[in-house]
Length: 351
Image 1: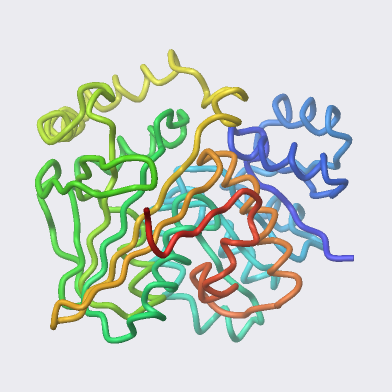
Image 2: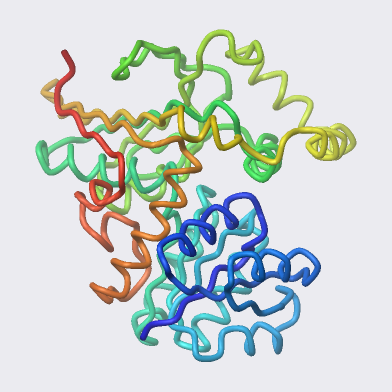
């Protein structure tokens, strides 16, 4: 029987994945660096656990002994992915994570040849937003293979977890990015607002440097990509000025440390009622140079709920299909993979 391990299992998202796995009778091994947080969770769920810090190579080696796959849920992934990927390659263990961070994808794809040589799959981004955006990008591109431009937008990330906010604060000083003619180019945060229609309403959306700038390009080959975050107008007063102000504050190391410290005052993540009630939404549009265009939409469970479900579906598909190399979710599992996640609706037209 294939064995797998959840690293960062006592974090907000890791705990959701572990709880959903236990509910289904699955037996992943839980792992992390803090036994005081790990042991109570493992005992409550009746699951085995292993303690290993990421800066302890021998402990990581031991934690991955007799393991076929690792799911990394511990962010920021620019700090956690590298030691785990190195150990996975060394031990011939498949690697998955839930990142949306461009540098993590870039590093994984640089290791494609080594991963293939070791018979290992490296599949970052198996949560929200990358699974739905990547699969929807592949879907619309398949319907219009001559497309040269791609827009992707997400909505529904209304109550980010502390971990998500910490990651976002870390990347704010770097500003925005778009992909033009196959290359990443800087783009001012808070500019380029568009109104994008989602299944329930039309929302203002701003270009944000999501990981899809790397993954969707790898999946589709489309050279011009812009990724957006759509927000209700009332959300924390955000908009172009709010985004620019946040970036300016984050450029001060002192202010950034203060903002990260203040995250402790916030809830760890959305509560159970919110995760049952809310939904995530994804929009994709491809366009040819002659103006012909195709659009599609996805409605998902609440974004963190989706991630827990998507992680388990990804582990299932990994062991069923046995892909090898550095891959996006859609390249590893197919454009319709997202439809295997419970509670998904895909629309090729809207009423």
